[in-house]
Image 1 (cartoon, rainbow, N blue to C red):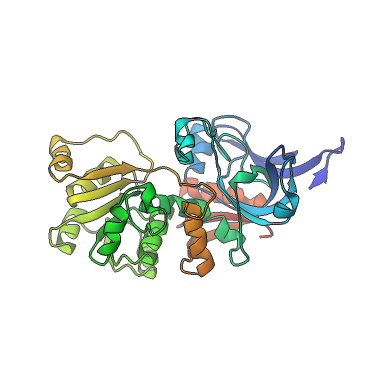
Image 2 (image 1 turned 135 degrees about the vertical axis):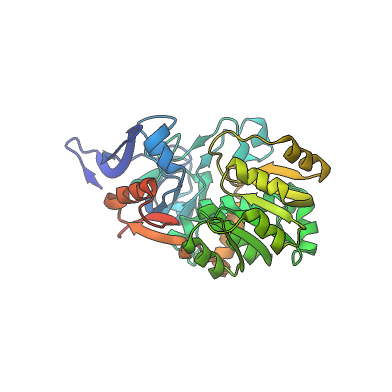
Length: 378
């Protein structure tokens, strides 16, 4: 931090002034208000959604500091916040700020809030030296969890939300969804699970499925690096969609019996159709990937939903209630226990002034990457 001529404390930040108008500049350090904390950002990951927000669509408001996957240290607190509890603590951040008034909020389904705000898309986020965050959104980190791992808690919680939402890996909090998780747990060794798309979320989802004990995980990707990373997670069934016909491949792998659970981590029409066409009777499908465009189903495909009594669900975020059974604490428990290793997917680290190279790399796809991150001190 430094002071300007008027004595105002200033910081460096990436400020989105409009579509394709991102500037690295000096801005005032934000001041925490009632119930808020000032977090010194230590690590921040670039999400795939940040790239169109910066270069194609813009944000909900401008100017805006993007970035919603980050962690840091609490340096100041506002009115009503217990300073002894939070000052100096290492924290992860749940970026969605619920209204707490709408019907979903009343049911503690904060990820479905109808009037939410969001760090990095509706109000200033983490691509800066400091960010103001409501204390309720802070996850205090134990010593075992590094800043870079904590900065990956948001995409990890999204992956866990998809997994638990379809009834898998739900030894805690399963009642929120259904009894499907308990049924799955009884026969998880026999479950056939497909993950189509091995970007960040697809790889993290695969990691959690393997950690939860699911052995028959069939993954679909289109890069050699994805194949290596999938094998590193213990997956042995990888379909390279550049070289193999996915329809023929999955029929051969499952003896024509199909998939009990299917995750679409891409959001394309043909992947949705593939999942439905290759679902086993009473199969479950989770739509995870943001759609590339309109999705439509042929009559024959729609009939398969009816005749096979398929369950089709969607997800877009993660469940956070600030208690021990939410998706974030599911992730945190495994980070502390050392049963998951998200750092293996961090392919690039930049100092804050150089993070623009990460944005451009993802925009132009000039190198293979999974997670690109700003790390303080890099």
